[in-house]
Image (cartoon, rainbow, N blue to C red; front, side, top):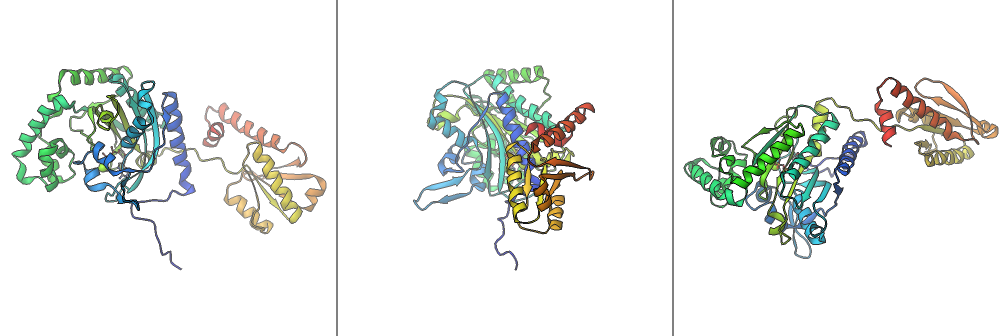
Length: 445
Ligand code: ATP
Ligand code: MG
């Protein structure tokens, strides 16, 4: 029978053959974040639609074309979150966190939803790892979050990723810049797409972010924001560059980066990979000094970024970076007969209590089928329990790779054998100065 209901276009299942990669990246991210003093926040998947309209901006592609909105049974206008910053800003205001010890440093690991055309690196449900830092006007805060991303990418062993930075100024200097942009695009109005025509009056900066090839071509020669920065914004940008230089973080200034969300002020940045084709921005972020206040909170600045997990995994794959595979089952305990089955189950339970991965037969299959399964799941060791073993209180444990066997006392400390094997494996890899992915995973476990 054919499957009648299929997954929705632009969504994906992550199967166990891949989940370990997600878990590794997510855990490394959250652990590294802790070293920088960023703790995880979890926010709802859907919010009041107007939260996104007010923060992301009603002239952005995200709000105009990509948001999943719906009316619930209570008549509320809601939206699935297209990004995390809006919800986190709401949460820090609502919880009062923004009035406590500053800076507030948060990180997150969330799913996001955008009704975009699915293609390589672009999904309708995707996932972001990100950070928000609230309460600092200093470029030190900008440098800190950028340094984190750079550090995280280095730990993963990524190369060929470039950091591009820009400043789009504050509302003060943006007035002049907007006027210059308006004049420039007004003169080329005839060729702009319909969406950009509406942006011309409301928010000409958004035209620079339009995906239409014609608008892109026109935007190429548009005035550059950096030329219009006020003294404070210029100083801030210099302060950021000075810190990145001091930290040894390479960057290029790309005056064309404006980012696709309205709340940004001053610093904007992207990490771009040379290995994953057109959707090459792995991470994007910037400063949003007016957002908290505009949502009804204190007048506190913020800075943050988000990176797409799907794109990050694409880069890892493209660069041939192996993520340590989870260590397979340490011991598969095959059994013959009811008594042996009960004993095997208890043995597996005891071993798990000692931190080893153990499995026993749950289907009641033949010994041959059980051993085939042990092979399939890549068990490191196997053991067969039958009436003889039960009577003798001894059983042979077999190394599945070498075929080597050891007789073990079933009533003794079975876990000692596995500790010894693990230690030997670890010292072997330390001896060669080369820790295997499995051993590394054991260490992390
Ligand atoms: P793009 O230029 O690719 O449209 P964006 O500017 O819309 O990206 P942001 O809103 O800044 O992206 O989101 C931050 C990151 O989230 C992106 O750099 C990307 O890695 C990831 N991302 C955004 N949209 C998608 C999507 N539809 N599918 C997968 N990942 C995405
Ligand atoms: Mg986009």
